[in-house]
Image 1 (cartoon, rainbow, N blue to C red):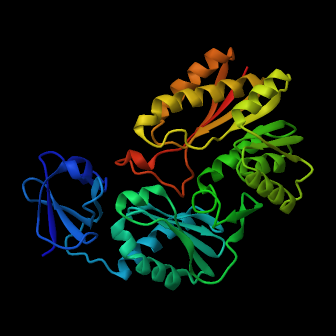
Image 2: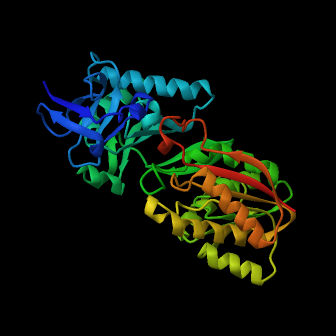
Image 3: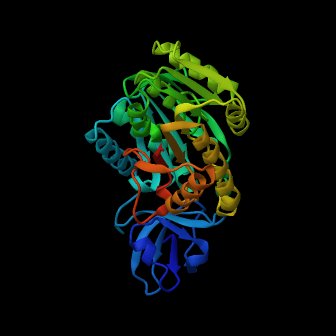
Length: 391
């Protein structure tokens, strides 16, 4: 009969509201038997059916529910239907060339990430149960969309918590993992093999477009620029100069290549160095910018890191604010779930006060709509993006 998982009293409320994770410490008892990674039925303390998901006894997340109908089976057709529904939602919003096709829990496929880069897919699988069904996911993509290739980027540490090996590589097709995509009318190279996340930061697409209104005739400093998404959008909007700053020379080489692809190499200039140190150097040299972009990597990847991360975010935002000309803009973001929106805004208030600058909030945005967030699952909301007018 397989595993039957019974929750402690009142532990079903969050899950019944739409969250998919069942933590091991929320469980009263487990009945039945099977193999790790098998499907398990989850019940409340009174024996009422809640949902089904794959079980993993070595993970803190014991079960990830993705079936709410007791009679529904796990088949390739189920994966095809879920993926098709997810992609149709994106297409309805106007996405076509590059977008997040499946966003895990938010698309009712927990621990599965699928990104579309032109005619190639990049996938990431983060749980044991879904990994056992990887071939179904691959076959579903092939049958639905006939892609030129599929690359897997399951090279993240969280897989070790599921007892899974780190892996990346081509899993279907023979293709160059450097794929040219089109974003906001710009050509960009997405490096599926060595790029960030599954190849590129797709979640900032709308925010990069939003930067354009603050870039015309401006001197723009793009910090933690990675491969130049913000830089190129600023240049395309008519910035007179864009400085792309990052500690990675490889990333800066990609910036230069992307700028050349779009005929913007005369506007975009790269500088390599530690961003904190370079900003202090700019300040000491009396440098000023019309617009400063701060899009750092996640400073905290667990709740234990929040205190130090808060200090890091505040320091970098103070430095950024001091470099903005009067009447200019600070564009600042955080991609860490643990740095909540409330904490992030509190940090910005402190940074503005300690920098001696008065600021107005012009825009508040989040991740792009191809990364929808479940109201019942705070973990699916992670990106904070503010545009501040510095007076």
